[in-house]
Length: 101
Image (cartoon, rainbow, N blue to C red; front, top):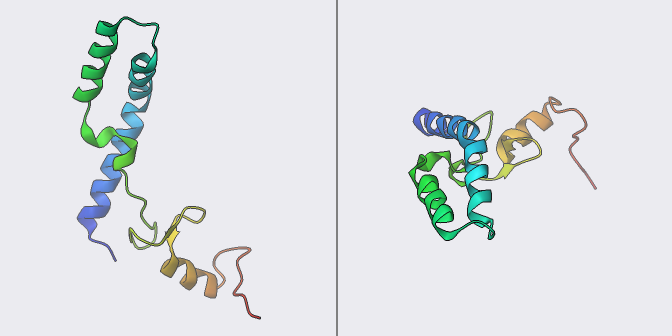
C-alpha cells in the first residue's frame, strides 16, 4: 500500500489539472500561433509560466485505484499488476480469466 500522502498529493494534482486545463490549452494555442505578434506570444508564455506547476498534465502519476502503487500500472484497468492478478483470480473482473496452456 502506498503512502496516503502520496495518493492525496496525486489527487490534488488531478484536480488542479482539471481546473486549469482549458486555460492552459488557450495559452498554448496562442503561443504556437505564428500569425500573432511576438510580444503577444511572449506575454502568453509568461502567463503560462505563472500557472501552478502541478496544473500540468505531466505531473500526474498513474496510480493503482486499489493500492495506490505507482509502478506496473495497466491503463485499461487503472490498477497495478498485483491488484489485477488478485481480483482476476477471484473472478471480480468480468471477462478476465487465468490463462493456461
